[in-house]
Length: 282
Length: 193
Image 1 (cartoon, rainbow over the protein chains, first blue to last red):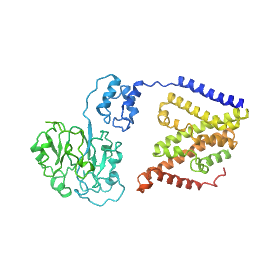
Image 2: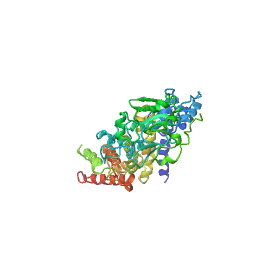
Image 3: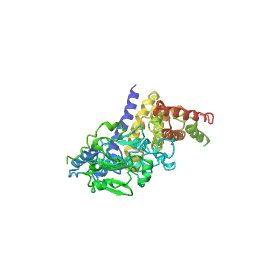
Image 4: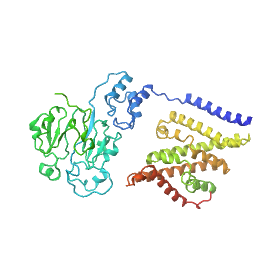
């Protein structure tokens, strides 16, 4: 009995002493600000900052190697928190959100063939450049929705990705996974977008999509400073987008959409208005 | 030499710790979603098993048997293995940050892993010599890694397959593990051990 207690106690004591000594001898100094910054970060490990995860970014910021403004998912709140920890002035950044620049779901746009393979856009894209006739349109197989760490992307029953502007944190995961580059990052305060990604000429677009931009220049004629036309595709100029909404009614293809009036039809979100995307009063 | 080789082959294939002895199922299911992490975990297990078997062998033959308290084997081994892993973690963190980055997160997970304890207890039960128990632990670790990597590879593929909804996730993982285990039963009879 006594030997047992002594032996086990002895082993425990030796182990404890060794661990105690080792923790002093092998102590690794950690910057206390690093832990504080890590707490302030969203913890999604999304990689938007370019580091493998939040802890790597916290380390980089504490060492002064990385700018405190790189965490897009955290937004200005996180930047402010990091700035407080580091004792520096916060710089305001415009929050970015991702938007799918396409409205051509399976009802509005034609397909080249019936795709029955893996439900994955990158797999589909490898098969004769994807089933959709439009070279830039959303394939609707949900690779972006699977990649989104925040559950912000909804796939409509008609096969179109719609990004919830309130849930999107701007981590750009979906942008990198999309094989057709149809998802673009835009400033969050801009609500009017040309939802088309086809650079084909108008006659070709009309053949395969009911809601594609045909490059007719009408939006640019209506609000010259807010639109740019490049290769038969209109884009909102996000530097001067204030009056962009005026051209919505003029667009013959109805491919300009204002998210402050709701999400595109067909989405479950269509009936709800985004909270944070109010248009400026002017 | 031949007997050492037999012990190694037996531990890796025939009596694979995960697929034939069903030890260490928890990390086997938990950390096997990606091949990369499975490899990291496997390396950590090989390392810890080998070091643990060395230390527990000394504890058994120089502390427990001389004092006649073999019945305290389990608790003594757990104590020693847990503190050993902590110590190793500290040393690695200080001396090799690169190794710590790749193994560090797995080390606390296996402090009280049943496969690690199983290796220590089994090599005593089989009354292996010191060298034999080290080879046995190495083989057990290799077998664990092999099972982990195979299973992670399977899971990565199953992830992309049209699995019925009710089977998705852990359910299909358990079915896969069962089939993999059945496949390993094919090694039975290769070596007696």
